[in-house]
Amino acid sequence: MLPQDKIVFDKWQIEGQSEAMTAMMGDFFDYHLIGNRFLTGHIGDVAGHGAPASLLMAMAKGSVNALSEAERLEPELGKRSVNRIY
Image (cartoon, rainbow, N blue to C red; front, top):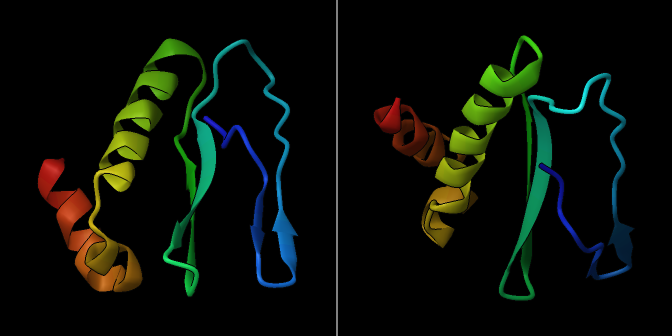
């Protein structure tokens, strides 16, 4: 559950790599540019391995991706929005 492309922001270039111990994993990181002014990052880890961890992480990543720009800029607001889903 990793971003497909690297991102360039100001003087920074961000990309990542993760090596799963099994075919499916419950780890992810992602980042979002908001305009050309803000960069937000998200890191997640679900305990466990295999399909259950992967499915739970896919739901969590989907929830984060559904956040509005305002929710992404304000961590407490974003956290409340994601927690409402669960």
